[in-house]
Length: 285
Image (cartoon, rainbow, N blue to C red; front, side):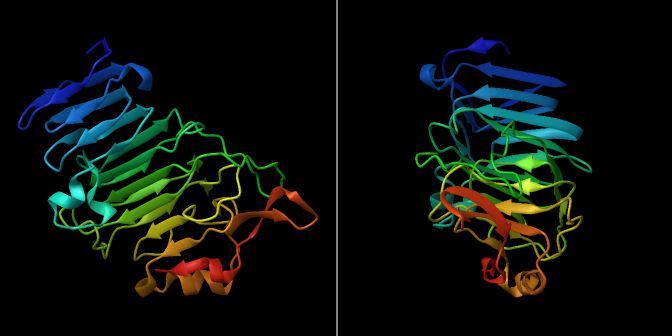
């Protein structure tokens, strides 16, 4: 499909299918919202839009080894998902993505995060590798920056019924990753799904975050691949969270070598730097 400056909707039961599907909308000023009550299917799907909305019967289906790239200026979610499920849990407010066979690559590239918070909630049926977001982390380990008090905190929620893999992965704000038992019960965690780190993971934004800036690894399995090179870095006043029943927070908190957080510089309070997180900030929820 070509460029468009208006909303595009797929109605229930409709399928837009091709080996490669390109949906190229215009920016947030001119609209171009994508409403998915039907399904976009292909080996490669590239979407550029303001917002992407879907319900539990719509979304995307990607062939084994395929890719889905979402370049968005607004939100990606199902605003009515929780209400339709008779719940208040944000976990239901997802856009469904089916990764066929052994899985594929999901890439979310926000484009307006420096001026407004963007909210993305995706549930993968199957396994997924998370591609790069295009966001450059502002605070390297041991470095210093001057905080920007007005910088927005965007949220990314990715749940998967299979396994998740990510590395060299940066997101501008709260990051929630979960292995879930099924799309119909996204608040129930899987007993077998894994999260693998193949590089560093950071969600630091260049501001002094008060609340809601942490990282959530909602998995019952120890993080695979975590190391001095494949570390985790989060925001000021923020926790790295694990399911309480898994015991992972207590285990990682005993000897923390891999989890870092931004913090005011003790010698220059107008600057932010980094530190190994205190064990109390590796938290069981």
